[in-house]
Length: 402
Ligand code: GLY
Image (cartoon, rainbow, N blue to C red; front, top):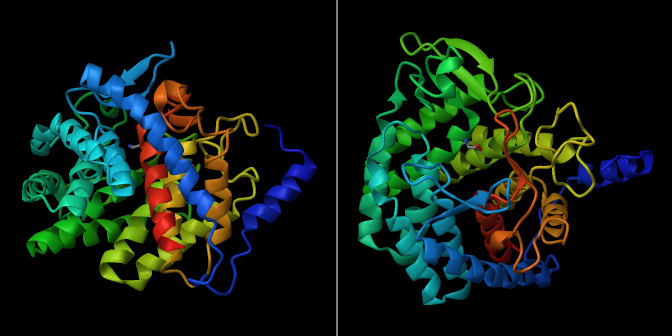
């Protein structure tokens, strides 16, 4: 994947995405095949994966080094909500009851994790699964599970810091870093569940915590070029920033690709629920950093870290691209300029044979070439269930938006 001068010029043209003055309107030509064909492909691939998952009664996460299925951990796994979430998107698109039944069955496998308080990932886990389930079925039991998960998440909110603590630091690799109260940019993804809980219950405590967390992150996580640090560590007693570092990126001051995508998605959601212009402005600043980044190849799929030292031989991260394009589709509906060129470039790449697996291959995951964590030597150039989830979300959103 060497970038020659010619390719670089092409990349500059494609990735400047020449943000137009006007937003697309309903009369913008609709490329229906862009939205419909990949969904049909996904249905076929996930029908095969469902057979394997049903047999094992476990949640597909990725592929291991031997090419075997790697299931989500049964204790608690931050990715466990994405598989039932993908099943909900297939149900939404096909109205086929088999997907609803499967989504309900697989999310029930981890329902009791709604009481876990050692992890910040409850928004990822429960909003993608039970949250989509409630959105599509209005099943009151799903709402009760979401409330329980939201209350567990709020136990990690510290008013002195003004944030939800991401990781406990008493064991595991997190205990080696001298952190006291680490907050990662990924944590912005927990806020959607909190905002939604205030809508569902009328209790403002969820929304207030979400807004405070978003404001603290806005103040401390971003650099002058609008890229973000991965980890900001706080003193839990004073709220002071102790350090700004990385855990999954190339370097403390680099731009980890998935982290930029989480920030973009998170601030777009904050604007959806609050209509506060500062969140829209931040989402656009992050989007502009991503789509204008000159080192990204012309197909719009970023390297795993925008500043990785092995570029142009560094692995790409399809999961970052899938999260980004889903967020951009929503942002495009609010922004004062069009992100449609970037959206179309990324979606066209994701649905191409370079990134979409042939049906029956890739252990029946839809997309190839994602990265879990290079610093941890984990899940490098593999499929990931969350890449598939945000891709299905993006395809679903695209159909509705354009
Ligand atoms: N912590 C979620 C991620 O790896 O992106």
